[in-house]
Image 1 (cartoon, rainbow, N blue to C red):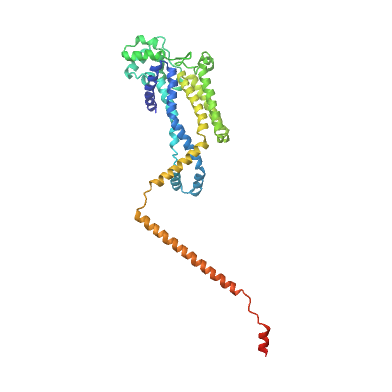
Image 2 (tube, rainbow, N blue to C red):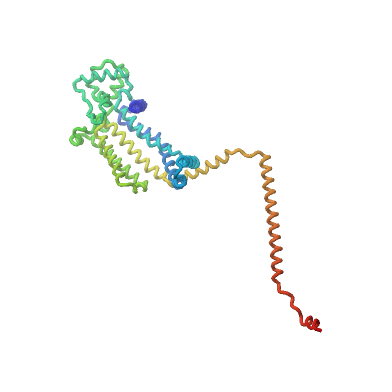
Length: 374
């Protein structure tokens, strides 16, 4: 897993170094990188919103299928898949969208925490020699991240931070690598903050937290995370019905992320702040332009278009077959009309017979009676 994230970080490192070479400031490069990655993710967010609306739409049908095939799991899975295909829904489509931010953040972390390997792409044997030299140079400071098991990563970051103290003892770097490392080590000042420093340390958390303006990094992380949870609850009323422990876990995660931002280098916290701001803006815009009501209408239109496309893809019957069917239909309609006429005529005759039977019998006159008597 570490190798995977490191490979992602190496790819991100090329982008970060390109942005850094343009602006000569790593803080600005991180913000530009965050905006770039966020823009790439927008289609995935819209797709996730559409998939979420589609899943809500078929929930009633899904419950009916679960009742019908409660004792046949295989048939239930088959019918569910048919329903998904009919409605044009891909249940696994949202998984990538959920995993993508994690992959990006971990990749950026490895790019930032291992700058010599993944951002500057210095040869591995040169990095090993730099580390061995740095350990014996007075003034070289190790990272206080042992409680997280991150010393193995922050070793390269500390070399960049203390490059002025160790560069005189390093002789294995190529001229190009020396120029890149020298330029890179001077570009971490952002708004008066050193992005290579951590706001505080794990050994004396509150004692060192307010010794510099870096305390703004974890504070903003906490505020923005709470704001994100607030907007999520407001835009999704169903969240209000969740158990209290679930809400507590969400806000507990916000506190934990703020704690991490306090003990790791400020550059990673800066990315988290920029990403949180963009996500809050995304939620507000998507709630306005891609609300469940709007997306539902889009899903309906897409469903109708898909049905029309399926109808259009069907091959028409040959002309002879169509003519035979038309003649057969015409004969059937004529036979049906004849039966209706026959039925109507029979009904009319029956009504006439019934009316005749109900007429009173002819009465005999007095003359007839007297005549017979005569």
